[in-house]
Length: 407
Ligand SMILES: [Zn+2]
Image 1 (tube, rainbow, N blue to C red):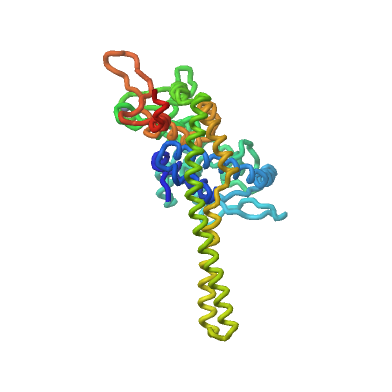
Image 2: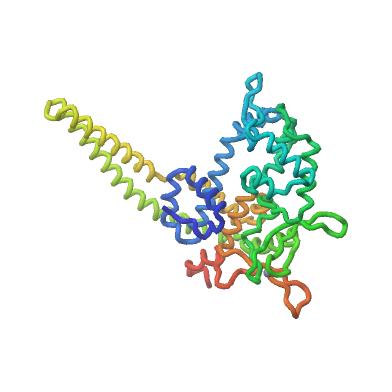
């Protein structure tokens, strides 16, 4: 129906945003129809996703509060990991128990890994599961009888499969291998978004400094280009700061978005009127049919078939009618959210969750950014962030179609 092509370089981001938008409902679809193909439209889509998320989070808070209290008292309300099953304790409280079909093999594998006898690959092969799942299992404290998912370590009331000591050994072994992929680490939010100037893929990992402290690094897989994550983020924030809008620009942005909405709401009115006419016609037809039936001019079977058909068509028409209804309150909230993001993008980015961070990155720099490579004439690395050739920044193209602003 619509595309988030620029924003959605990354499949997981795409799905997160898409799913959130879907939850938000149909008014958004019509609100963006006329805007989709320009930067303002893309911005609005992302922001709508953000507002929806926020809304869902507020509503979900109460449920989560309740789930948290169960976990805090040693129960387990979330999906059980492989090898454990969701169960109820003697008081009926949700907890975990071993899945005896596989638990002994998992126990053996985890203990084997802790002792250095097994590798991740061997575990994956032995249990016929993916290496990715193995990684998740190795870091999952539930097997050792405790949880730390909510930032708090809690001893669970279920029977541990492995000891705490075994678990600690596993973690120590995992942390010793620098090659371990650090997926979904907030400190590596720029991974996948940045490429090396040489064309190589930038990956992230930890390295130990001279004093033994661990530092997060981004490094190119093809050349020797390497930079501390902290340093890179400072540079990125400077770049992002240049994208911030001043009040004059924000006012213009608001005008453009409102004009877009105006156009769209006119188109939507037309659609709505035609949907209303269609609905009235169908209801009329159904009444007529009933009339004919009671007058004995239509037999039972024909009446039932035709009436069933009309009923379905009427429900479809009703849905169409509500679909065309633009909710202005949502729009105002979205606009306000958009302006906050555009006014202080750095602050917004710094405080956002990982997936929002990534969305913001692609939003401001739809073509990603390149990390400058060490040059032979300069001994020092030129570690600036460069926009790829031919790329357009979100704002550059946003103002591009606004002639009075270019001079
Ligand atoms: Zn490189």
